[in-house]
Image 1 (cartoon, rainbow, N blue to C red):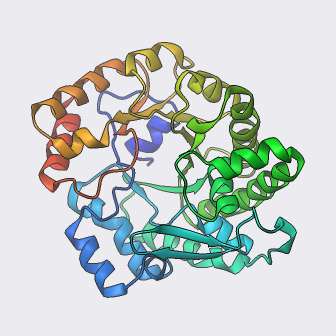
Image 2 (image 1 turned 180 degrees about the horizontal axis):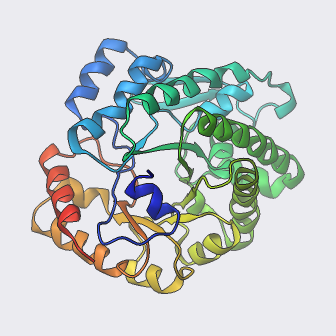
Length: 341
């Protein structure tokens, strides 16, 4: 039998609201920090199938969330496309060579770099109860391209935005290549046991409307259409962080089955403007979860109330902060679990 989360992503509204948290497997958990210290670097942890499966399951074991999100990283796709990937302490991820300095054709693809991720999915699926939905994921093409072009994260995605204006045909080739690899990557995750997938477009908010349509909506629509054709019945969650007033257009035109809402969006506005009956995921501010107190419970109830008339997956508006106290997560879980819409 499908779990509550999977049913909700397929469009069923329930009185009990399912929940999971973006980055729920990670540094706020002491058991994660212990395992990370034992294994060494982040990439080493991702590529250790047994350890990555354990990290994926840790928040399920502790909190009993309705969804387990695969422990991996959005930059596995450019790594498989031939860029070198390193996670440097205090500096974040680094990709080389940067595509601002070389051409896409100069990269030598290494598709076998995806195989250990599939093995992690298989391992996790074998350990989860049927009630817990296993979520796979990938970065959306625009966000992945910003890292591939610049070689690292940036505040305003200047290099990628400038390349897209200066050489739209060349930038389109990068986006198209990412689309192709992402489809295969997500199909591989689904075949290994993922029951739903999420597309993370963390930098969608940096684009003007015309560029948003070209570099966010169009490639996400291509991925979603391919997944619907090849993996019918598997829900696709689209999460365009920072989309703002462009969120309803994204929800309609990408074809995603559910849409993630970040913390800057008024939930009542989202409930009113998004397509009727479409499942919505979100949208508590991660810093409110960090801060805790009565305000945390009150805001959670405001969000639950706003989305009470449609299928709703409770989540954060982005990833959980690594400093978040465990007791705040417990309080949030109690608030959501006790809600009856």
